[in-house]
Image (cartoon, rainbow, N blue to C red):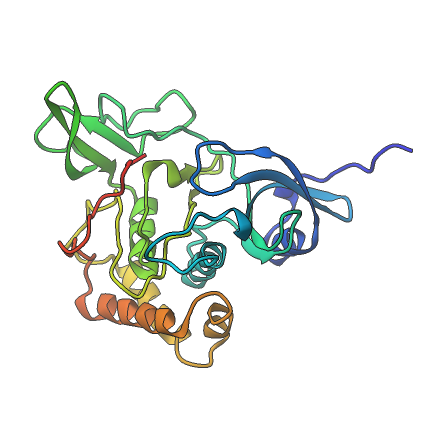
Length: 292
């Protein structure tokens, strides 16, 4: 008897896609190498529908000195919840579920349209040859060109330095606000996934929601600048959604601690009060290593 035809994930949206990730049969196809924690490439299938996904079992998490053991998967799901609350949809659908190696995070796989490495030689905004404009680059100039924002000077070997820049892109700017809210301690270039439909996704949110300031990112180009009117509106709305007893807080309470939820409220309140993108605190390395 032939296998039933599988409907690709692009036919599903919203709650249906979350339901597929949550309840579908998870089949491990292989392991993604190079990650510090176990990352498994899988398919998830239910009722003739199928989607590629990433499964990160809690059992495969490496201990971190500043995060409680076994909590990274829940933090990834919490990042998705906050992303959805903003209305920006910057994090792929992500759920916490049981799998072949126990409980873990399951996230929709995103086929990136371009390879936005931070090792380009120029920042001209042209297509990088892989399907989309470059988002990060290293340039020889002292100042970023038009349409780019400076991050920091970086050593590139043999005593040479170059200026690390990122695109002055509205999608990246939204992600910078989201990272400030969730206290992302590891926003690297390889965590930026531009999709073929023009959307931008951020992935790998295990080291988030710490009660202490841990923000490390390559998206410092707007540091100290006023938030956009859109971001101000989103932050105001998010503040209301984080009031005690709301559905969002109830969901977050299953994923992070009450102290971390209170710190989350504090960061949102800080953004509302300042109306500006945060600046590096100076008490913690501001750029992740390695940066890509």
